[in-house]
Length: 565
Image 1: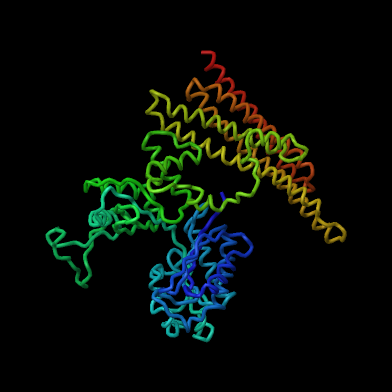
Image 2 (image 1 turned 90 degrees about the vertical axis):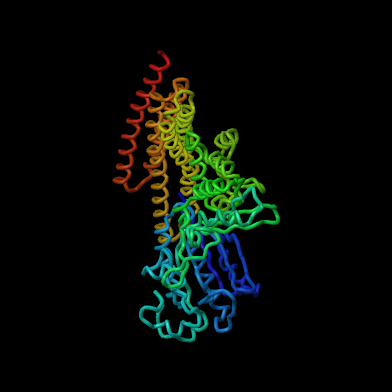
């Protein structure tokens, strides 16, 4: 899975459009990241920028933007309503997909060190990237703001994590930057069938982590109880990592509970929806729908869709689009206006719609492309697609079995098999295009120059690398397609008997996928100069091919016995 992270730097300039445009232009250089939002504030004199992409391009873009901000923003002249300590005040990295918060924290520390070394800007590490517990709190890192930097620099306990030195003119101009890692923040509003802001606030206080002030006598009108330091004693709410208030929206004529989910790993979107619905019902109110503000990661909808499918005792091994549809309908994401996942899900927004993929073609288009004079797609891509179809057939039998009348107590058993089949199918679908990419890499080598000895050597090395890749890809197809036999055997022996022939066809397709990919391993391995490595790959492939034939024969035997009963 491709790793995607979000970066949300805050720059200490919200009034000069030319400066803001120059900074964001640096982010977009190279076209490897996608700029999602630029939000300037005149009163705060601050601009919040949001962009996403793979980790390395995102970090490079962040460095370029911070460099330009340091050139154009002089902190000695900065004034604004928002706390700040540098031209780039904060720069958090946020996991979106294929990467953990811990991995983002490591990247944030690397980025902080790089900004210090390359740009000379002192950096603090905060939240998940913090080196000490107290610096997890951004306010601790930014204590005293820009004006306190002269006394914090070169001072043990207050100095930045990277780039510490005596306060100088460069620090005076750029200030310091806090680089951190945090989980994705989901901004969500829950629609209520009431116009009462007071009732909406009561629900918000019931669920938000902070809760509500404890009052004398336990009554709303009671005097707030304070601790020995004079701070209000709070009754915590039921949802960790959430902030919430109630308000009335003139545009829709309803009250809402407006919530920020600051850690969706602790409180997923669907958990928040269910709990707000429970708290609202306890007060005689109903949640009628949900409004997402801004964007959200795909996993928030996938997790929600699977949750509601499980609530219905249905298989979760469905196509991604179907799972997301269940999430949309279950939480009423389309109640107030259309909810288009292509415009609300970060991963979908990052997809290159202009890129031509084999797997996005129609069945006829794929067949026609294969039949054309072009050598790609060829047997390797077809083998991968046959494997995907084999996995799809096994998944189908599992889904049908999970939904079979009289088998309600077995839905979870079949759902687990369907999930496994769906995962195999997705990996094989990816290999359809990857096999063609492997062929294209070899073709690209032939266009390399070969006049000098250096060019010839570089060309030979590139050809060996491309040939190795072209051998490894179909071997991966063999291994992945072989995994389908477990799904197919389980469905042939335990699945819906009415669909046993589908499991049998899947076994035939799986065998063809393995043996077809084996042919590609053999023909590509023949071009490897490293014969020892070639031999290892060929031995591994031959073993898988032999096992595939045995598994297919075994499954067809099971299928025939069921049909002949």
